[in-house]
Length: 346
Image (cartoon, helix red, strand yellow):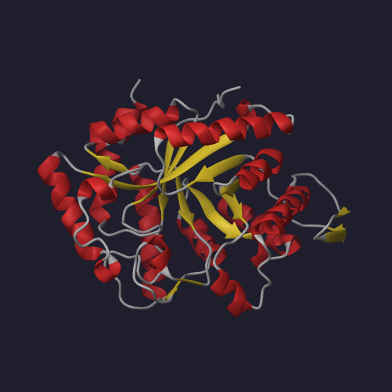
């Protein structure tokens, strides 16, 4: 089948929005952090990034990623995107990903339609089934077993699509988990909002292939491992009666670029110093770089083009040792200046 969707190759920035995730963390979240997130989105736009992305947690324990245990608060993704919509002009605005169980489909559809209107239809909507049990418990939201959660996600996307379809009317529809009775969203987006599904397992791939417009995998992956996952995705698309040309692929990566070995080591030492709890202390650069976009500009560009040859058109980058973080603002400048020309020439 193959993935041959005609889309330009583009890069997105995973914006910092947790209390740990800024170049100079202040220990909490407030107006200064929101202002910094907005400023970084504007900078990404100026540098030529095609999109900026935020994630969705009430709070986060970064021990999942190797960091020390502890609670780190987050900005709200939809409120943050509203601020970004008002302050940017071109860059696309995305969620990677919203946890579907946190919001009823009719409620999210209204929020998305307003964000699409406010942004001039620049919204990219990533959805997932949720995974962090502690925030489910504290919010009083039932966390169902994974198969049921993912089945619920598929139905959620189907209803959301019906509510957001440009030119559509009232929706009366339902299934195992949700029911809409003459629901209407007004105003509706001017263009079809692209819906992404994030995750790795076979059930996630099946849901993405049947209901979504694209699939995202983050934050580390090898070329051969990804090739195998695409093989499974192709089977699921065929089962759903779809082709690869109708489907978009996105990858998230940790990223770090240096001019050579010594410069890369210099950048890595700065990253190690920034990393919360020192969990990278003693970790060799080669170990940390495994499955990430790390190296000279030429090495990183070559790796990007390898994945692009498989059909990936969108790369979401986190310039840190944790998702949706930035350890040094200059790191994104170096990437844009050195790598962008190598993957867009000709």
